[in-house]
Image (tube, rainbow, N blue to C red; front, side):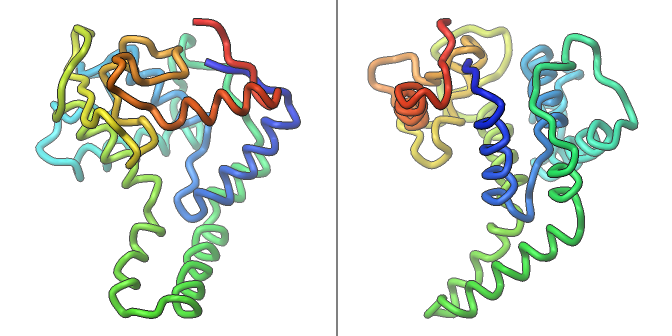
Length: 213
């Protein structure tokens, strides 16, 4: 999809740690699960297909357990799913520590106490605590159950929204499974992936280099 120099890789690694906060996901473990998902989409080997679970909670618990096994090297992935992902062990240890997760949670609470001017705003706190898992649940559940299909990928992947501003193009799952290396998740003229223009700007600024598909 794209390449970047080591400086920018480390820069965005830190941005990932700070922006994900209490729900930081290890890039290596995430990359392995994502590659498995594409290779085994909607089969029994798919780590998070909604078609093998009664509800979204069961799917995410199973995904979490597999993620933790790869995170702590309790199991090894197939050779095809290894390598070519960024790794920074120090940042990974910080992001996976209870000190970091609890610290971020306390910061969120302080921020709301300091700036929220209505009681109902505090109901948004759980979203901040669990932003990563919530995002994964929406994409993996809805993106393979609800919506329309542009392509026959021999799976159940769907495009849930034609203008996906809510999840920055992540709900173009059918398109993404058809062209997994394309930086633009939209394939029809009436679809819009809001992340693609951002990538084009980063490419123009020479921060990333978009590969030709």
